Image 1 (cartoon, helix red, strand yellow):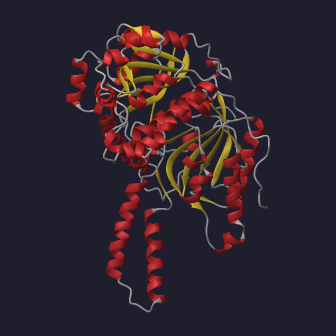
Image 2 (cartoon, one colour; image 1 turned 120 degrees about the vertical axis):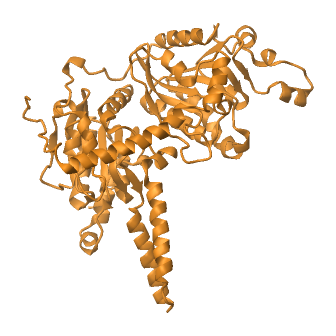
Image 3 (cartoon, one colour; image 1 turned 90 degrees about the vertical axis):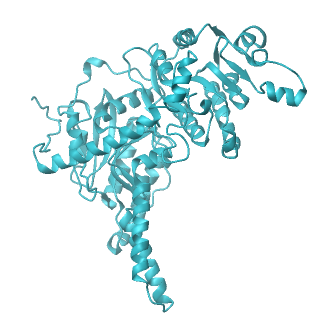
Amino acid sequence: MTVSAGALRSALDTNAPEYAANRETMLAKLAELDAEQAKALGGGGEKYVRRHRERGKLTARERIELLVDPDTPFLELSPLAAWGTDYTTGASLVTGIGVIEGVECLITANDPTVRGGASNPWTLKKALRANEIAYANRLPCVSLVESGGADLPSQKEIFIPGGALFRDITRLSRAGIPTVAVVFGNSTAGGAYIPGMSDHVIMVKERAKVFLGGPPLVRMATGEEADDEELGGADMHARTSGLADHYALDEHDALRQARRVVARLNVRKAHPDPDPGTVREPLYDAEELLGVVPGDLKVPFDPREVIARIVDGSEFDEFKPLYGASLVTGWARLHGYPVGILANAQGVLFSAESQKATQFIQLANQRDIPLLFLHNTTGYMVGTEYEQGGIVKHGSMMINAVSNSTVPHLSVLMGASYGAGHYGMCGRAYEPRFLFAWPSAKSAVMGPQQLAGVLSIVMRESAAAKGKPFDEEADAGLRAMVEQQIESESLPMFLSGRLYDDGVIDPRDTRTVLGICLSAIHSAPVAGARGGFGVFRM
């Protein structure tokens, strides 16, 4: 193996018992993940998928497959939305990034096998997140529409915030980001505004139905007798209302026309793609990523082993390698795109790490280089020595830098992501362009044992202050219950179900996923903060 001067040298022993144990644990977590994602792939279940096909219709994923260019990847986003809730995993909507006629697009597709594609609160959250991604990265938005509108039993959670969905479509258009709606079936009530506000609309003959009020509502409100074809059929909209720009004979024809529409959008990326001839694979096998993260997240691991398996040629120019060693920072390329990387090495962030991160983020903004955050942190260090040493000031500097940085951010939760460390490493609230988690990740205000222990101490001190005896048995029971609750709420599937990430990914896919995201990011201008940051307390 030829190793360049700037390439990382791996110290990972793939024959060690620890590696084998880590790998076994990760594979078990991946099996659990696959089982849960299969629920989303199954849509509304075998019965409703069969009924859908008997009507001569394609499923949501089949429509996407025919829409995107052959042999190109489709990066599905938020596939576990609504996991662990009363709603079907996937939230009756498929969203993701795919290439259509050479153009990277944000694609959404209603899944009509799940309650007719009706929107529940998680459908709405997932759709709004898709719109955020399209807007931030200037990706044309293609909607494959077949939905009966809001799931009426949950209307109280949908109606008020749901208006943002239509607002977003018009804002995308105003920003010069094309929107295309392909209507395969019902697009009724509020759902009618999706084609109504899109730049380009394609409707399928005898299938598309777009109206604000269907026959029963019209009859009740006005006494008029009208069928759904008269009120909102594709033929009527193509010939009379003018809502349909293109009239498709069937679903395949609609998807063919959608590809032609996208081909004529004259979309130009803000930055050219890297020359494929200059992109080099990492020196080390991505398969080995399965054995890097320990099953016990209290055991630290070297993130350079991850970096060496995801960046081009495993080359990494480390910044301040001897200072603030609990945080690894440096420059690399990933699928040809320049990237600055911040990766937790020892879990805890001290003042030195915070100051190092702050400077590094400022440098990335000067150079217009996107940042990649690799999480494995328990948060900022506490204790008298560190409080007196200014950990609040220094941690605040890092969070300030992350908050006001304007280059695109990507985050991957590999292990722990607890407390304010989650914020400093660009957690969800800090609006990374994309955020993914490995099955090994955990995230919460603090670890389960720490949180339960803090509650126990507070209750013990409260009892002592009141002069009351402390119930040790009740305390033990409460601690066990709290630990179990926090543990379950820290897991990636729970967090992904609530859209706190954009998906839980196989570690082996990390390089591919990040490459797709970086390509999408460069559809929009990449520019660092030129107006400075907030006040840094010195």
